[in-house]
Structure formats: C-alpha cells, structure tokens
Image (cartoon, rainbow over all chains, first blue to last red; front, side, top):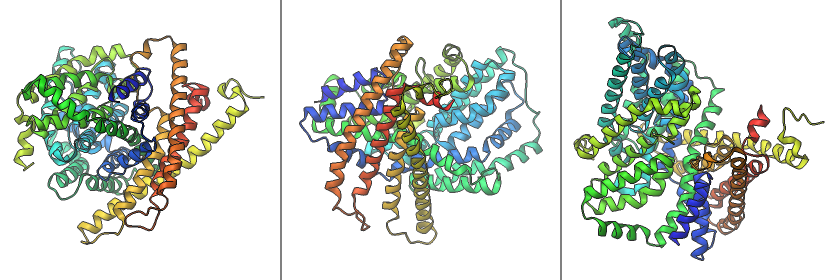
Length: 426
Length: 177
C-alpha cells in the first residue's frame, strides 16, 4: 500500500503536477490497493482543514497584506535608513532591517519578498548590481520564516501534534534570527566595501532618528503585542493573528490613512488564495497520512531508523541531509505536511528536544527555499527583478553559505535554539 | 468574426468559449464568497477575543462558525489558486524538455487533475447524503454544510483544470492580454 502511494506520488510529482494534486492521486492509489471506499478522501480532506489553529495562517497573511496596503513599507524603510542608511552597503542594511521587521509582521517569506522587492529593488538597482540587490532582498525575506510569528512554524507545530507548542517554536527562532540578521548585514558590508559601492542615505542625525522612530513605532509594536501575547500564554496563535488583523486595520485606517475600504476585498482574497495553497496540500496529504497510519508506516520507519543507528546525533544529521535535498526540490509546506508526521515522533523516541528538532527542521527547509537550483524564493526574486536564474544564483551563493553556517551552528550548539524558550518555561 | 489576435484560444470553438464564460462567471461569484467567508472568519475570531478578554464572556458557536467560514474560504480559494498558479509543483525535469512537449505534458497533467477533481466531486455527493441528518455540535444546521464547500471547490477546480487541459497552460494570460 505504502509503496503504491510513494510510486504514484513520485510519478505525478516528477511530471510537474501540482504537489497537492499528486498527493490526491497517491491517496487514491493507496485507498484502491487497500480496497477502501473513496469516500474516505473528502472526509479526511475536510477534517484536516476544519482546524482552529490552522486559521492563524490566513489571518497572519491577511495582516501582512493589510499592513503593506496601509503603506508601512515606506515608514519601515525611512526608519531603517535613519539609523543605518549612511554606512557601507546602507541600502542593503535598510533592506535587511526592514525585512527583519516585516518578518515579524507577515510571517511569510514569499510575501515579504514581494513587498520588499517591489519597494526596494528600483532604488537598490541605482547603487548596486541587480543580482546583488535581489540576493539581499531574498535573504532578508527568508527571515520571515524564522523570526516570529512564522507561518512555517505554525504548520510544523500543527503537523507535530501536541509534542511542540507554537509559542515555544516562535521563541526558538528569535536568537538564530538575530544571528542571521547580523550575519547578512556583515556580509552586505563586506561585499559593498569590496565592490566600492557608493555611500547612500542621509548622515546620522539623532533628531531624524527620533522622528522616524515615532513614525515606525506603531508598526514595531505589532509583533511585540502579538508575539508577546502568544508567548506569554495570553492568547492562542489564531487569536494573536486576529489581533494582528485588527491592529493592521487600525494602522491603515487611522494612522497611515492609506488603507481604503476598496482595498479590503483584494487583501482578503489574496490572503485566502495564498493560504489555500497550504490548505490544499494539507487537505490532500491527510488521506496519504491516513493510509500510512493504517499501514503502520511511522512505526516501521521508527524501528528501521533505530536499527540503523541508536545515536540521536546521527539521526539528526541524516534528517538534515534529507531535508536539504528535499528542500531544494519540494515546496517547504509540502515537506512539512509529508515529513513532520513521520520524523517528529522518531525524534521524540530518541529523546531529542522537540523544540530543537522542530527549529532545525524549519531552518533546513527555509534555507532550502533559497538554495539553487530550485529555491522558490529565487524564482520569486527573478520575477520581481527581471533577471535570469543564473545571474541570481551567481549573486546569492554567499548568502546561502552564511545560512548553512548558522544552520550548522544551531545544530552543534542547541542552546542557541533552546536557551530562550527554556528560559521562558517552554 | 472572432478576434483571433486578441483571443486566440477562444477561436477553438463555441463550446470552449462557453466553458470560459462559465468559469469566469463562477470565478466572480466565488471571489465574493471567499471575501465574505474570510471577512466573517476574521470578524468572528476578533470579536471572540474581545468578548473573552475584555468582557469575560463568549459568543455562542463563534468557534464553530469561524471554523466553518474558514473551511469554506480555504476550499473555495483552491480553484482560484489553479488559475493564478500558486499550487507549486516540481518542474526540475520538465523544464529540460522542449517547449512543445512541456506544453502537451502540462495539458495532460491538467486533464489528470480534472479527473481527480471529478472523482472527488462525485464521491463528495454521497458523503453529503450520508451526513445530511447529522447536526453541527452547537447549531441546528446540518453537518453536511462543511462538505458542500468541498463539493463546490472540486467542481470549480474540475472546470479550471479542464480549461487548462483544453486551452493550454498560458490560456488565461492569452485571454486577459
């Protein structure tokens, strides 16, 4: 049964059928071999989506859409420019800092890439080459899946079940997210100096910084309130996402006054369609998971891997290598949905901290989103910047290598990941 | 006389033209259904937070209703994702093929996808029949209402995939140019 599911999935997936539908065919294959009624499929699909925590994803996406429609990008850029605009690679630093703050608002890397790319690439192109500009934006956007709130972490926590909390995973991403941000900025400075890029932006002026901070403070406060509330146990991730939506509406209608009623249908629709991509994967994968469960795949896989190695470190290395390969070819949400239910229980059986394993899982796939030749963020940035994939790959390598270094650091020193969540009681 | 330059795919025939118009009509109805479901879901969850934390009470059935709107919004949005191409696949191998073969393969995959959706659509009708007598836990509404979203979504997705199988992967860009 399992073999049929895997073979059918691989055939359709390699023929470029959307992964959600390839999972649908794999489900049908499994049900057919198991001589089960196909009516299992719509029931499993519906139950997989009828899930309160899952509602956080479209709500965070909606908050991100509303914030961008509310014109926060210019405020964020002005704020970052007032602090770090007048240093080597100033515009690159502005992009990275804006990306970090936007990550804490939207929670999605691809959405951040679109918002940052369309706003910053035209100005960056005047100072830097397009490939470098696109690489910086892609790196800054990738922080969206690491810095809380992160939709990737919500999907991971959903798939892992009760073993890991969304709030704990959010906190696990804070320190590595800051390390990555500082790493990106250092790298941007080095490249800008080496290539003699001109200094841009206004000189540092404390009054200007205070003015810009005042304008941006309402945006910066949003992740503080929302993530703070989720981590502090005041509300759930879904409730936090709903608060983020209301907060974005208040900012858009009453503070920036750029959001119009006419913008709402488009924002609601775009958030729904983007979230439905994840929804379709979850829905169609639900029957595959069902077939795997009745065929005892998780148990068989656990005993197979435990026979192969009793060492948790070897298991982690094996999973990381697998995820790097998978991350290069498969959309990350599909990978969470297909692989987390298989590997998270095995990690628990090895006694591995679920937050540590969960974060490494997410970070591996996040880095995969930027790893050539098929990282999805690279395609998004090629579309925005109108450059070829080979130009993009040529420029993005230093940033990809940096992310792998941080990944290895997190794997070797688990305290980087687990220190903060453990301190906060997770 | 059809304007072949502006709408080359529509020159394929009047049945195809009818199909395109049907899909467009369902798209615009479904657009507003998605918008309304998303708005109601966001409003209900926000109102529930306000009631729970500020007024120390809660709205009856708010959780169940918000989940219902969420299920509807997600399923109804899936066919729109087919049109805008958000449902990502692995194209590493296919990208190496000649353009003509790639187009034909894409049409074949769309046809296969349409068959999948058609099958799930038919199966869902029987599930709706089975669930019709069941009520939602906190409301006197049939539990089949959840499955109606699956039915509409698979039917709508079937039509979208049929359009792609018939007109090719670039059909919507060609029409909207």
